[in-house]
Image (cartoon, rainbow, N blue to C red):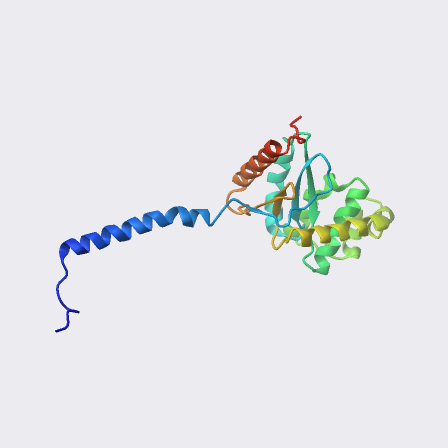
Length: 223
């Protein structure tokens, strides 16, 4: 005789409910652990700032999330200690347009105009839809900002700029950058990108990782 339709013992049903609830509760920590606030960089990268804790921001002026992130980054850098070296690395992901933005970044840095025009470039691209993706359009725009066109053009095409762009591409590959903005710490830690939801929380994680590096590597002293 089949027992498929036989009534179940109430005590057994209660036991099953209790067992399922216990299993569900025990699974919660494992699920949370699957979403860490940082990931290890493998293999670790040596960095270009000996004796410093190097923090990199991989970004592009063409990225709208980087545009929103930029003011938060600037506020954070105002409080940096001398043992921390912060650098921005413009990436292209193989796009010619973003590669030209990287050249524009290093050209403006080379002529001492990056700090003044950094936010203005973001605003031009994302707020006013200005095309800055070619040398000609970038040249026309910087002229409007009061920069000598020949000086910018020379910097844009310079060996120094090409060297910096090539290094940025090399770093992007070494750090396995697949999205921006991305923050890395000491060539060892990649902060999980929560910029769209919790920008302040992201830099809390960065500060904790910097403190961890100081503790683990006595050569890094807070000054």
